Amino acid sequence: MKKIAVIGSGTMGNGIAHTFAQYGFEVSLIDIDERVLERGLQTISANLDKQIKKEIITDLEKKETLSRIHIYNDLKTGVKGAELVIEAATENQEIKLNLFKQLSNFCADNTILATNTSSIAITTIASVTKKPENVIGMHFMNPVPLMKLVEVIKGAKTSTKVTATIMQLSRQLDKIPVEVNDAPGFVANRILMPMINEAIFALFEGVSGVEEIDNVMKLGMAHPMGPLQLADFIGLDVCLAIMQVLYNGFKNDKYIPCPLLVDMVSAKQLGIKTGKGFYQYTPGSKELMIADRFIKL
Image (cartoon, rainbow, N blue to C red):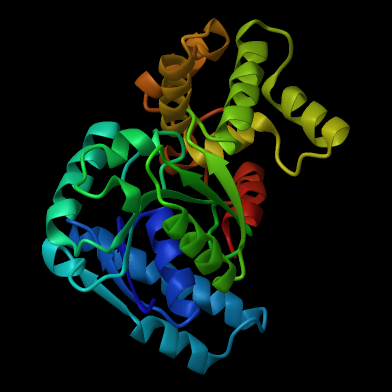
């Protein structure tokens, strides 16, 4: 496998493109917005510079990595000839289903179609394609170039061959793949998101304050970042979307999103990306510097 296409040039998409290109793959990075594509390339370049500073790569390796990334704002052109397509678009089921319908028509029959979804059922996504056996989940963690885990999620019809191929490919990227069966939230978010939601309930019910809740989990449970600041880092809109997937999938009241989370998303207080969530993120603030330690390479 030599040619990869990545759909979406946001945080996850540019991280996935960066990683594949660094490991020698030719990458088509696709987004409908040219400005977002350019920002994605700038992010990749800046992150490669950080790797140079840490002596992980050389200037020449940065140049070679960037030379392998080719940008497109047309889906059909971008995926032409790709042996693997990884979708990293917005965590919205309708958007993803529409993309996979198109990919099923634009790609060769043997192309593997992967999604970086953090919670939406792989079987549902595969159902709109001509070859559901070639559809699989490839859930990377953020920041992609640093985090070792890849959740490899099999849909109901995903073939053994495709699963084995993606497991091996993940190892080629120096990642550690974990094979998971299809279920709402898979493993990572089925465990993580209810914990974050419960932390929000503790705040909502007045059990303790934001910093206090985070400090309990950092100091008592050895978590590197408290659940409320982690929610800010992930994006409260993403957290809410995943909780809704869990609730709709399991029909169990323990997955009902906290009203405070719903209200904050409605108020566009989404965390770091809007400058305000459970914490305020202003230039030079302690909260932004703490988050930067986890966001930056």
